Length: 322
Image 1 (spheres, one colour):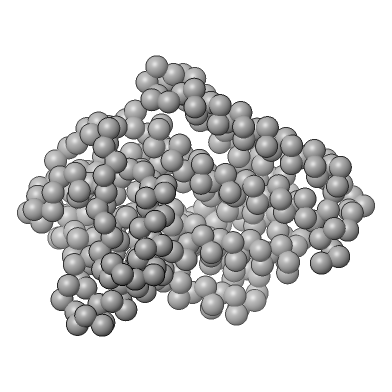
Image 2 (cartoon, helix red, strand yellow):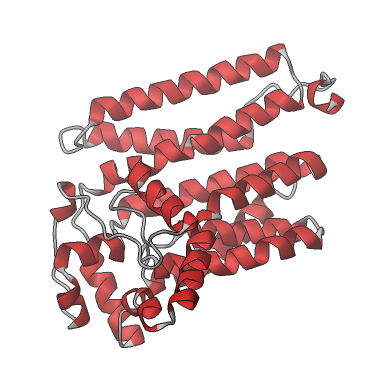
């Protein structure tokens, strides 16, 4: 604990790499808002939110300069990670200026698999014995709910046990999030939970995928998660959806992509126990994104591929600079 408050002899005078990543995304999205001011639904609120983020970042920087220690470093990084919950719904405000593409992705899904895996997978529990169905459902929801604990676990592990690479790991995670968010802005796909709700399960089952255009500009209704409705993890997932879910961010699956990056970071620590403790949650999470109909199967596959590519690119770029 003493290390947390021990003043640093070499004070880092500039912004951390993670903060630079945030500023790059801040600048890009602010420019989009200004250029498209008349098309954005809530431009004033979005701009004021960005001002508050800048103010908070500057305030934490000032605190660190007054008290340069590990704890204030952690605070700077932790707040940027916490801001992700604000940046996520912000992608919806930007991408709904573009026409929805779910009909394209549902069609690709049908052509690739000959069915809609998200629909069939979610209906699987209806054909299982009740006890088996309930356990399976809870395991899927556990996997999905483990997303943020996985992020916290890896970041905290680096902070306490691989401190020299803590900022590198934090930058990789934050930069990866912002890369995914840029894709979400320019590729407006809502995912099955919103699209199936909008067009009807009967149409989906028959392979009919209407083009909804700007439908999701005014509609945010999604399907309830399938499975054991009295389960603890079921309610965690549903509460999370009610709190912050928007018809956005389906392709590629950032849940799968970021958790893939976390697994690479866990492996990099050479602490195999960390990797193997996280592994079952990672596997459950990859399947659960399709099971709860948050993503098409191609979203999950794209998450695996993009997460791997992003990790190796960012890991290579930061091999000396952080």
